[in-house]
Length: 89
Image 1 (cartoon, rainbow, N blue to C red):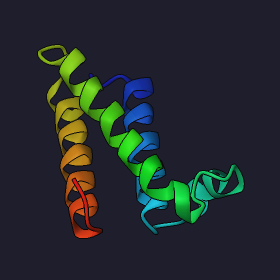
Image 2 (image 1 turned 45 degrees about the vertical axis):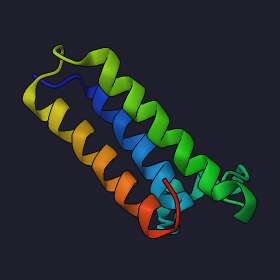
Image 3 (image 1 turned 135 degrees about the vertical axis):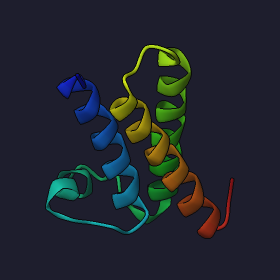
């Protein structure tokens, strides 16, 4: 059974990065209020979230259930694609 806190952490990091890349919604409005989405910081925010998700993947390899592993893998791949589309990594 998936750990709700783990799922929440992955979703939060993914949503923060997506918001930084322009997908602002009610769930990520606080990131904008906190200044994490200012133009000069937006890409850094997204890249930091990707690094954290990648580290989480490496540190939890072999210890996640299918749902958790799939969620984490999807978040990482999605952010990598978005960052490449916006001209980087």
